[in-house]
Length: 243
Image 1: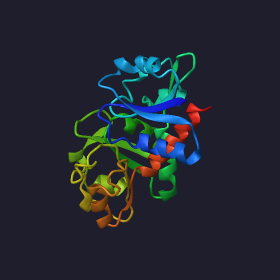
Image 2: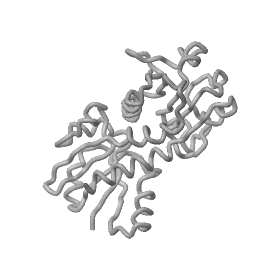
Image 3: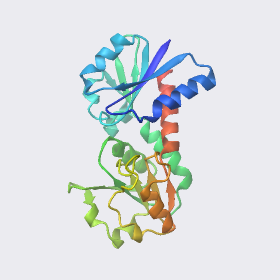
Image 4: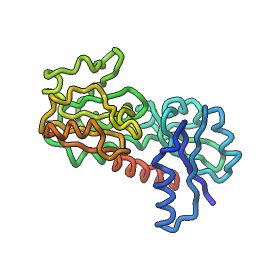
């Protein structure tokens, strides 16, 4: 029986095990999907020893960038993005890294885009934000990152004012702020400056309606959560694992 899983740290909440277990049951697939909660990546090679039929794994926080040097091969798109969320384990023991986050985000964002969505603010600078930036550029949208810390080509939250929010009509939250159980948290965005022209995409899926989304919707903005993105990236990973 083939084995698949998700690699991360403190990931008891992970979307993937339940999604794939239900998929296997629904589609009559004989396989198992496990939660590989690793304190660090030194145990990565041991997974292939313990599970000789391991064929694929999703990669989540905090290993999307850290896992790259431990892989034997890297898909060109994952190399350009600089983050991996999908690993294919080959029969010969080699590991290839891919990025399907950008596929999930691109295809879930696209139906909501309007002609005035030309620029986007990316909240957060972690591994997920790199895939978001790549997808936005390929959709013809100019991205600009926002962080708590100053850095090259990025704003801080204190920089966000009416001038920026009049230009940047897409806002994508790549931070964990607002995730269950800390549902009252949200990034330090001046939501009172949002309006009907804004599109807020929150990568969080639990809760389905985050505090950021609630406040944005109260100002008339369109809001989207990360559930469909997760489903689409998972299905893209499944194709890679079984190609």
